[in-house]
Image 1 (cartoon, rainbow, N blue to C red):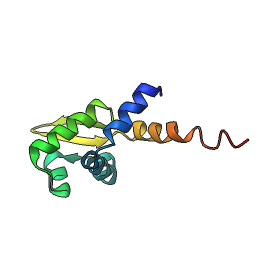
Image 2: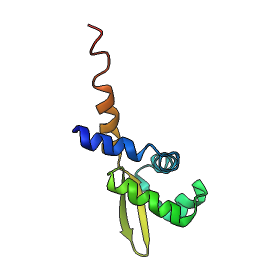
Image 3: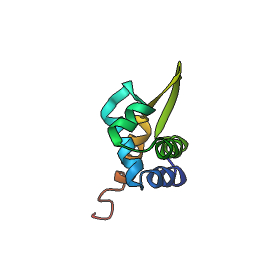
Image 4: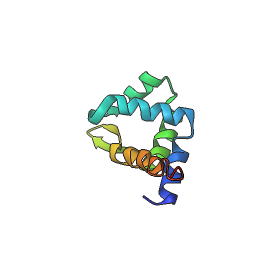
Length: 96
């Protein structure tokens, strides 16, 4: 992962509301949640939630899949793990 992609991911998580959405999706696991399910769990207004989901999807933290009339949203676990690894890979490098 390069610096630009990591910065985009961390910027997307830099909002309390977007972090709440990601945590809600992480809790849901691979099954994911519809927009309505996320809305009921977070209490966000539909328009606000749509904005945050779009931002998270563009940062590759959330995937969205059409399922009939619904859209299933899932946390992008590989990318989230990549972000964690990116920040931790330098752990203690200057201690030696």
